[in-house]
Structure formats: structure tokens, C-alpha cells
Image (cartoon, rainbow, N blue to C red):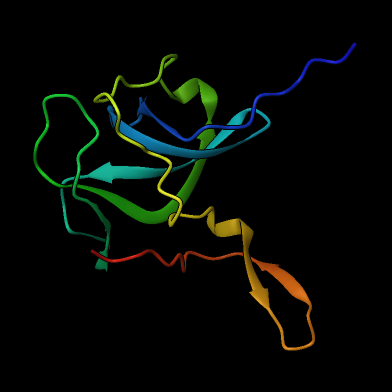
Length: 123
């Protein structure tokens, strides 16, 4: 009998390299695919995604997620997920994994491209 694998659920963990939260969007073998979290509107001269309802307990200021996608070993993240406010949805469906975005052609083909052009709904 095979075990039923749970679908991956996006979440936040502490990233030990900078001791700040990271938004985990996917996992690949022994690595996490993530975006950094900040309070700055821009990073590297590019605008960050604004999260107006900050999911962290005790935080009221706007949180920003850096658009650049990163990958690192699971061992460089905290063992446990960060506790969030009750009832806050952190799936952020408009933030897609950059390496998995699809381009649709007129003839019906779809190609997977890599890049950091992730479109979100602006508030």
C-alpha cells in the first residue's frame, strides 16, 4: 500500500542565512523554492509585491515579498512554520513559481519558460 502524498501548502519559515522570514512556494527534493520577505517597497531597483494584510501575529505594517525567486537547502530553514494570524490565507495564487510559468501560442502549444516575470493583481 502506497502512502498518499499531501499537496504542497505554501507557508513561511525563518531563513537562517539572514534570520528573516521567507515565503516558501515549492519544494524540489531537498531544496525549497522561496521568495524573501521585507518591509521595503523595492529590492534591487525593482518593485516588490505588497501584502496589505500582514499575516504575522503582532505586525500591522505592510509586508512585501521580493519578486526574485531563490532556491536553497531545507536545512537552512527553521524546522517549523511561522505561526500566523488566524484565518489569514497565505496561498497568494497570483504569485506563481517563476520556473513554471506557461506561454500559450496561437497554435495551441504551451511552453514552460524560466524567468522572474510574475504577474500579480495590484491593489
